[in-house]
Image (cartoon, rainbow, N blue to C red):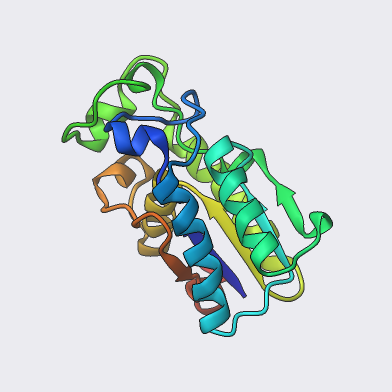
Length: 183
């Protein structure tokens, strides 16, 4: 089984800035608490993790370390995967968050190709799905949006029009079992 969680609140979230890959924003005090809350939620739901695979950006690495410590997972059970990094927003990085469509985001200078974003995420998710036991993926809002787009069969170029998961929300990716042959 594979679960997904968005990192705790980052400084960029608090400051109302687009972070993407290029703003390696740390967790805020609230984000640190949210990471502890994620671990408590996992315990409450009696999810027995075999590993955490995470984006190596600072906000996700910090979230992972806190969860792993609370769940008594070893360092070997924490696996960074660059394919899980946030969507590269190009020139939008570091600018104030405002309402924006997928078309505006993906056509912005230096922005990542959404099909390539989908492909790298799908490869990471498929690899995680093949592992025995239970995996938690700790990543970003854009990654969560693209996962929803993949599940719903939405054109990758429209991923940003999907509502993102909240910081710290633990999501079971049951659709990986249900639609494994369609993904």
